[in-house]
Length: 152
Image 1 (cartoon, rainbow, N blue to C red):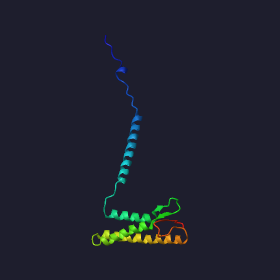
Image 2 (image 1 turned 45 degrees about the horizontal axis):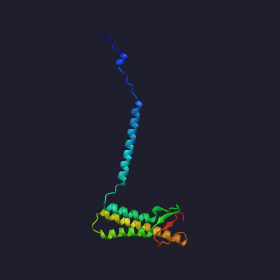
Image 3 (image 1 turned 60 degrees about the vertical axis):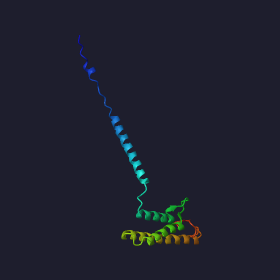
Image 4 (image 1 turned 135 degrees about the horizontal axis):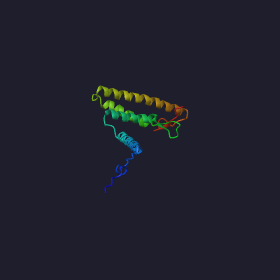
């Protein structure tokens, strides 16, 4: 007695769920984006190369922060640290003197221009602080810091 298998039973039906493929692709793309953001954050945290331009940038940033790059916590003005800013500018001036003849023309020009621009900005901010002191609005320019109201 030979029984022939039922054709329907011999070939199983294959069900393809296309949704899982789309979901897997979306998850893969999401994980790739998260990984890229993580790598970008890690790169952003890395310290820049230690070179002459980096030194100038660090000193310039320090000087600019003292010249009002920070907002006052009350939000009414900016924080000014004339002494700290003057120190950073003085360091740049010292570099001008100590590196004479040891820098490329480009480096020498950049250093001199940066020092001059910061000195000019320092004078402007010091005059603004002095004017506000006369009006009774800000601490003395001789103190290490103060709050400048930019609307005054």
